[in-house]
Image (spheres, rainbow, N blue to C red):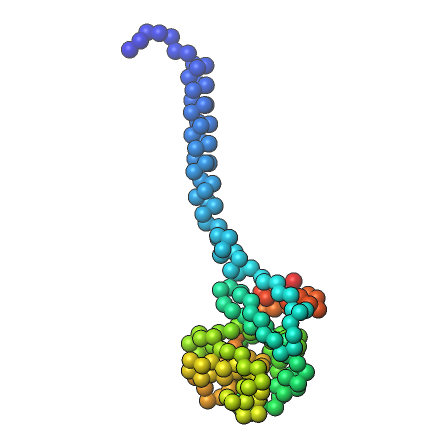
Length: 196
């Protein structure tokens, strides 16, 4: 042991400096750790609303968008298709869309806010296959119905409102995601009517 006098000022300075450096180190380690709790950019994008320009879709044309990792079919229906939606309800499993496969505001004959557009997940409700859009030749699957969706994997059939026909493996209508039309040519998937 030394008999040298203790320099209290120097001791306080070293204690304070060590505390500041230690606190900075803890903060530096905590920031990335806490940031890792936030969802990744990919995860945020997967759940983020999707904006689709529908102004250039031709009548009868189908385009695909992706929302939450699933394909969404968007079809611009002609007036003839819209008028024919009521002509085969006796062949459908759930013509009134009683099962909750769509938002409340889309629980109608068109299953959409805007009758001109079908917005539905392109995923068969049987085993998750992708139904094909049959434009004009769907009557090969269902007599008297020219447009619809056919799942070639197991034979499920859906009309142009995404409603499932009776007697096929799919138990439910196609899922209609939350959607809205903030303007005539813009569709937002993931934000429903009144949520915007």
